[in-house]
Image 1 (cartoon, rainbow, N blue to C red):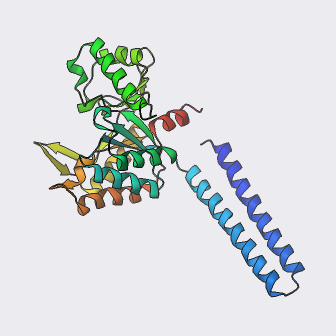
Image 2: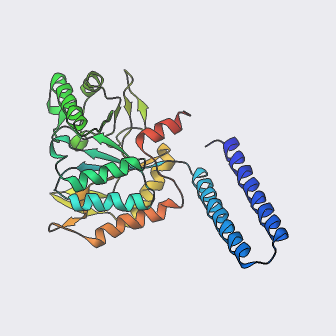
Image 3: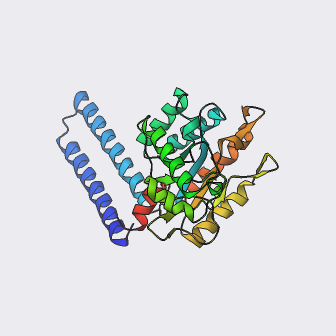
Length: 293
């Protein structure tokens, strides 16, 4: 948000504060002392305080750059679905927008998970496409890549869901994916950071990679990263690229088929730690904000 917009927001805040004081003063001046009038005044003051709190919260958010994106990969039915739903619910309660990377061929039959996704979208989150059936597109021809991406979009459309953002499974893709994306209606690719931050690739495909992982996948096991390290990685990413996209997999939080409270606590502590410094947005929202739209 620009300096001018911040000044306008502050002036609006002060104006509302003055108006509230004037209203309270006028009510106190006219007060006859009756119990009913006193109760009515208390009720009106309570409503005004509530509105003031809303404005204050919005001002606090507006002063923080929207540079944190949470990308949850491998969203699908049943497998780690409990962790997926708990992640979504936690983020919604804490006003954290998300990019939910869905595997279309493995999604849509679990009503509980589908309902969580729809609720998150209503709150401002968005879905992105994580392949059709979690394929390694780099192993396919450009023609097959385009057919795979079209199949993914078609499958999601049967659920009244849509996206133009592609998160390649295994983070692997080559230059051919840009042709396949354009041919199938995609305009943004979100892999994992390799060289540089967001860039507009040849042909108008926007490259917007994740920059921080919550855990490392080593020899079939999700290895946790210390909270302090994660906070440091987020801050480093913001300083280097102007944003941080935190990559999360629901499987990271599962141990022996159950949600592990200690693993989830690292995530919840991370969100609360950085929420005081940054605000959260989606890939699409960040693009709009950074381009001044």
